Length: 261
Image 1 (cartoon, helix red, strand yellow):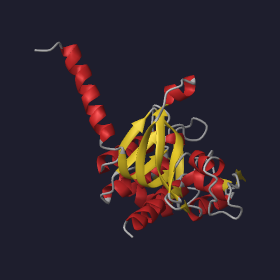
Image 2: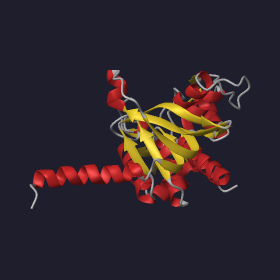
Image 3: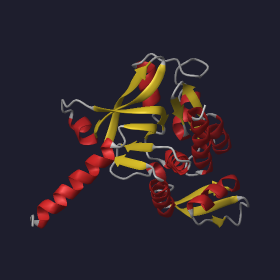
Image 4: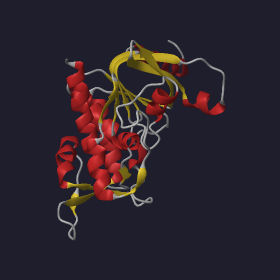
C-alpha cells in the first residue's frame, strides 16, 4: 500500500486535474466570483448549463464578506427577497424602512458560494484572467493563469478556456471589458463604444441602473453587477445588494436565451 502522504497528494492532483480538464470548454465562463456572478452561476447551472467561475482571490464572494465598513451586515430591498429565498438566506425587515431588509453578510457570501457549487457550477479560485479569446467577431473564451504567477511577474505562459459566453463579473474595474476595448479594439454597446466609468454614490439610481445596464455588450460578452454599471456610467450604491442579486438573475436569463437560440 502506498504511503498515506502520497495517497493524499495523488488524490488532490488527480481530482483537480479532472475538474480542470472537464472545464476547458464550457457554456459560460465567468470572471469574478462576487454576488452578482454567483447568482448568475447558480441559475445557469440549475438550468443545466456548464459553468466555470474564475476568481483571482483565494476566497470567492467578492465584496460581500465585509458588509458595510466591516460591520458584517448588508441590506436588500423587497424586490430581491425571492432570490434570497431561492438560496436559503435569512433576512429581517428594517423597522424604520419597510421593504428593506438586513442580512448577515457572511451567511450571504457562504450561501452564494454553496448554492452555485451545488447547482453544478465549478469555481476555480486563485486563478486570474489575463486575456480573452476573440474569433470571428465574437468573444469565445478566456486566457487564464495562476494569480501568484501574475503577482510575481513570472514569465509563464497561460492556458485557455473556450466558452460560448463570457461574463464580466469583476466589479468596479470591469477588467474583461477593459481587455476587450483596449486590446481587442472592440466597440461595446455603450454610447461611445468605450467604458463610460462609474459615477459617485447615489443609492436609488445605482440600484436601478445596475439591473438596467446588465446586458450583452458585444457578441458573446456580457457584464453584470458593478462591472455593468461601470461600463455604462452608472452610480455606485454601497452595501445594498438587491440590485446586484437581481442583475445576476437577469444576466443568467439573457445568457440562457442566447445559448438556446
